[in-house]
Amino acid sequence: ADQVIVQTDFGRGLIIRTRKSDGIKEIRLGEMKNGISSPALRSREPNMLYTPKDYPSVPPSIGDDVICEYGRGVLTEIADEKYTIELASWRLSGRSNVTCHVTTAPKVVRKHTLGEMDSAEKVALAKSQKVQAAKFFSEKDYLGALNTYASAVDKVRNVQHDHTSSNEVRADLVVIMITCSNNAATCCIKLAKWEEASKFAKNALIMLDALFRKKGMKIHTILNNEGIIDAKLFGEWRVKSYLVVARACMEQGEVEDAIAILKKAKGLGMPYIDEF
Image (cartoon, rainbow, N blue to C red; front, side, top):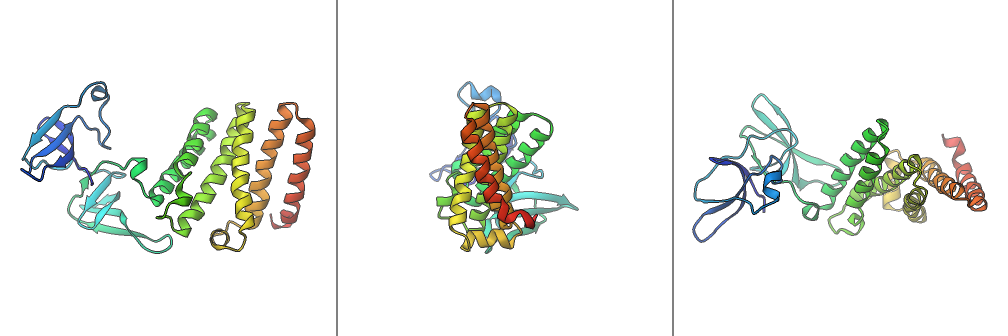
């Protein structure tokens, strides 16, 4: 159930539940805006408030998870006393999102944990982490970038087998897994973490090889239709993975293996050379 973050007489609180027997609300005090307990409360038992009083939600801000008369979503804009919400509880076919505009302030709710998220929410979270990782990389914070790319991969690792996944979500999954694995591998190269670099690059190759075996099927077709052509998938991205593996082999003294991998990368990339 959606747990509303409220402003009580004693500070912020999270409504854990409302008892059916007597209507008493159990409110955990000390909540921050996103529903995470304040550091002071993590080290001891939380302060609880038991009350029949209806406290108001904390004021909503852009980026908050909220609930309105049309369902749950994320607040994307506040303008002229109108709130724009991208609904998560409504989804159309394909990639179409449902947006609503309300004039009554929505209630702020606790963000879902990873285990509570559906496949689309997990993919959206991984995309946001990919953007953050790219920022770390541009600032030469290679360890921060590595950890964030790796986290993005972990967020969607089981989405492929999630019954809530649409084909479009699975297509996004493929892109995230490949690009974040390759980018994490690049971070490892910057940090001289050769074994980890090879591991991430090989993870990308597993996804690419699986996609190559299913050329012409739904996911591959979606990606091609969205402009991610075979030259990028099986040329640029796959060659990048092999180059990382070759570099890792070379740095670890496995020269013959590195040469063999480079030759393989050249052979795989040649059919797409004219498409760049």
